[in-house]
Image 1 (cartoon, rainbow, N blue to C red):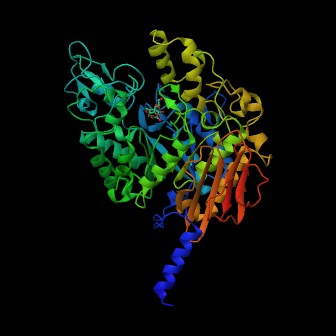
Image 2 (image 1 turned 90 degrees about the horizontal axis):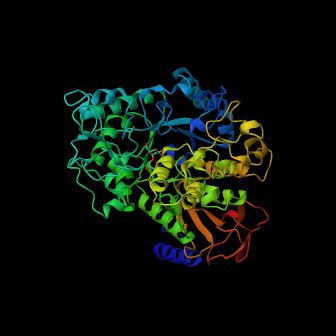
Image 3 (image 1 turned 180 degrees about the vertical axis):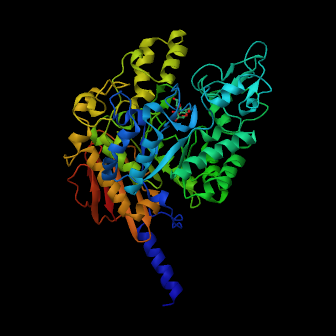
Length: 574
Ligand code: TEU
């Protein structure tokens, strides 16, 4: 038999044996940040070392062995810079200074050295679409036209006693506020105290590149970039149309020079260091994602796309969602990365309610199911603090219980204004509020969940007696130990990093099942996305060899069907 005929026969046999195999694709080029797992720390809520009720850097340093034990490779630290904390540090007053509540630069250096000594890397939050209005640049700029810092920000005269255009702010009201002599108004996509920087001014870009070098030279390994697609503005600042007003973020993310600036940032800064960069791609439509992440374009390494975590969201309200839509999102995400780009996978962050409460049903079993999904997708996982414990939403009932500027402004705009009744608003806010993710980390069953010896800045979730690190550590069946097992498996399994992704049953409304294939190594993840048992028919051609990880136990290598307990997740080797 000729060699080519043999090859054809083998190929046909492979097709018959595996009709649902992924198309053979070249695996992506190897990079450390494609193989690592990132853990996000919200420092205010992680660990308080000095009893003032606010988490701090020394608190993080004390917990590094915990992170190492979990299997974390990279820490993403939410803002640790000097700030008046209108938006919990996403309003920076001094980019080169540590927030006094969090500690000193010496504390930062000790924390970073501790991470590096354990083989972990640190990325920090780059918040440069806007600064605080208390930043020295803005203090100068608002003195009036002619000030050397005036053009660090975006100023326009008002129109007919109103704002220069109809841009809304994410935190309610107009995105324009007058300041200083002359009556001109400055642009702020977020709070009044978060003026947008003018990236068209080369001095601003030089300042940003300089502060990036400052932290990279200290040994930081990269950045998570806050609302980075918003940095370029259309200089004409035209009014949004009625259609655009439904999605202002898509206009804000589509400025004429955003890609020029990101390419410049790569040339000037990132390319000179061994970094990872991940952009918070608010407003970036699916088709535009690859423009930010295709390696050949020299912009960012990865972006966060939000359709997954927002699948049940309509502003501050919830809406029903379907598993098939979540599958479609992951499918689209995977396709858009191709071989030249790379994805992130995440189920929560400091802006979202707790994953287990809105994508799961609050149970530990559903926390494990979501973890299994996040950690077996093709993309770098970003795990949010406390999710590894199955931490849940807080039982909010009153507006006074919230700290977040977004919640307080929504209350003003929706309820105080008379648009919506408190009885309709509060139950929805309790499900969607960002404060759900910001309650203190639950370390133990001690007072305040072991987070602080003082009064915590935001209330501890009353379920801390059951859900905490100390209780879960010795429990082999805990959410924490499931995460630990998943991180170890991922680390040891190249197919889970680079293997091609294929959904093997996209239409099933209850079970999410997909393969990851790298050469001869093939894995199948099967997840029951519901609180009812599932009986899943294994598609033709998938031959399970062994169970690699089982969130609920008791699942032997099946024949033609898999019986799944509520929220059970199983990873098989094929
Ligand atoms: O978030 C950007 C953003 O638009 C959303 O996450 C938004 O805050 C949320 O959906 C509103 O409900 C980033 C930061 O992650 C966030 O914490 C900051 O408040 C915001 O930018 C401004 O810096």
